[in-house]
Image 1 (cartoon, rainbow, N blue to C red):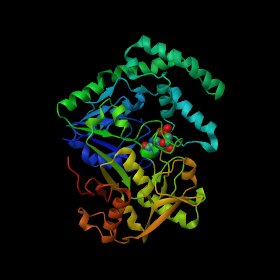
Image 2: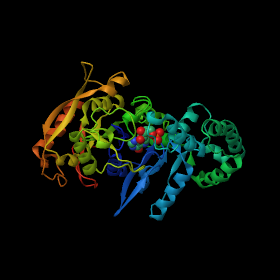
Image 3: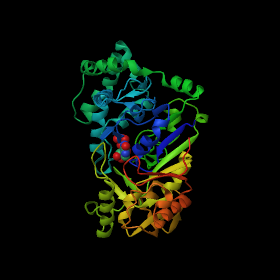
Length: 438
Ligand code: IMP
């Protein structure tokens, strides 16, 4: 039985949902460890596609227990709606366990997220405006409100009162926004507490017991390596630890529990929100040349690159091996799942960035300074494509056209990753499993 951490290896949206869906049913526990409802992935239920934002995908499998760890920030209204949606689809949420140490996203966090983005103007991060950043800010500032606080009305009121004495002043005086009363917030949130109370648990103990009993755990990461608060393209990141290390602090298990770290990587790269992206093929509206824009549009259309959570058009670009190597390093990836290889069937030739150039200097590794990344010019290799050959029906690596095989092997070589899965289409069975064992 192995315990696996699954993480995004780029800027999120790498297809973690599909890979999770592929392997999650093998695990006794499926645990979210960071982020909140800024995440979004689609799971397939019979002939229906369901969008999950907060619920661990283990909820879809009878034998798995879904767990929301202490590192997650929970918008209780969103979670309750998601549970109701799942129950209406005939999917039971009975087994869900939520850490009572998880922090709560409050209404003022969402207001402040939006207002702060507006204040930043051109320099904005492009957040999902779900209140993620402000909630983590309060956590680190030791001013947050946790799910367990909902279990004691007196404590909850007191904490809300203390929080509002500061938040109302900021909302009103800095941003000219409406303020909240303690009553308003208690009327909305205390009933959430009553609904969620049966699911709240001391989840680190639950997972420790599970590990001692030889049960297996899948730690389900959200967002991606380059959106990690420490290792990402700061400040254009989310506010949590999306890398593999976050699985430990976000759940309370020790490092020896982890056997494998599976990184999910697209065969090209996408990003939503602002921030540096060296291999971006900019759209015409973003100032891209006609050639660039044509490539960007083709990747976007062929790859259906629109956000599940926000519906935003994603920025698209060629595969970046500098990032690939960095993701292997900072996560200790033992395996990679390469997704959306079929999207590249639309191209005559395919470019891969092997290093960057900035002010006459070559960078084979992720540059130390963010400003280098902003001005980095990709050094590309151009590989022959397999245009016109439909690879969506391939189920064994040897069935792929020779150029597609060579492309995958080349990426393995230049990033140092073992590509254990290659995905050739959106459906569960459109996957080539190369050397994945449990
Ligand atoms: P926040 O997480 O809403 O604070 O947004 C911070 C940055 O992370 C923004 O650039 C978002 O677009 C990005 N981001 C957050 N969640 C996701 C995700 O699930 N996929 C891709 N990008 C994300």
